[in-house]
Image 1 (tube, rainbow over the protein chains, first blue to last red):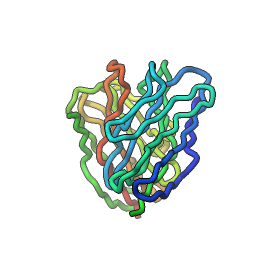
Image 2 (image 1 turned 90 degrees about the horizontal axis):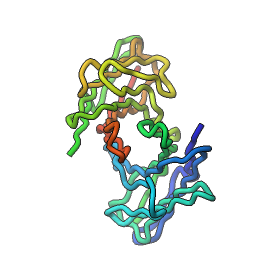
Image 3 (image 1 turned 180 degrees about the horizontal axis):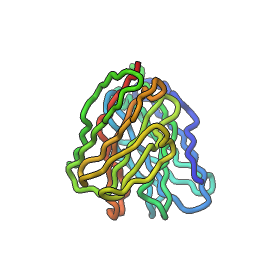
Image 4 (image 1 turned 30 degrees about the horizontal axis):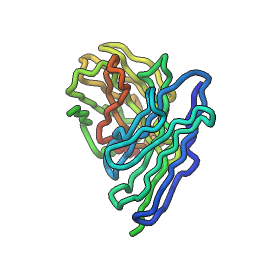
Amino acid sequence: AQSVTQLDSQVPVFEEAPVELRCNYSSSVSVYLFWYVQYPNQGLQLLLKYLSGSTLVESINGFEAEFNKSQTSFHLRKPSVHISDTAEYFCAVTLYSSASKIIFGSGTRLSIRP
Amino acid sequence: DVKVTQSSRYLVKRTGEKVFLECVQDMDHENMFWYRQDPGLGLRLIYFSYDVKMKEKGDIPEGYSVSREKKERFSLILESASTNQTSMYLCASSLRTSGSYEQYFGPGTRLTVT
């Protein structure tokens, strides 16, 4: 069975500093990978996804994630964070064969200090 | 834009009451999901449905049931609410064959059972 591990439950950073949110997955078969974001008092929304092709994927608000098959990782990065990035971030995985069902990690709460 | 709505943002119920959480999506999605979200545990799948009147158990179905009589509506039922069901409940929907596998989430219902 597949699983997702987010190594950090909370990440505090200063505004304009870089950030990396770590995600590792385990699966014996090929997977699709996602990052979802949950802003305060809202539901989740898709931030970016890796389905195939280039291993580096980007979001419209400056986040990027790189699929590393050998290390089974999909870490999320941003070179310079803004106060508005304060949110909880969830890494998620789904199997090629059962792509409707997504397994979520436990989440990383990103807090930005001015 | 896809819209997923949930009947209540906040709900307070007493132990033993029957509780209905309603979810409606307006984009003709085949798949619908109910999750519960707890701090440090991420999202855990309770039930999902691939079509009208179809349902499958997720990872934590005990104490819950669901109903899907119409394509756009997916209801979560707590037959006899207990305090350990106090949680945030999130509904989501997705297209079965879109190739994107993105799930669209409602804003959530925070349920407190006293």
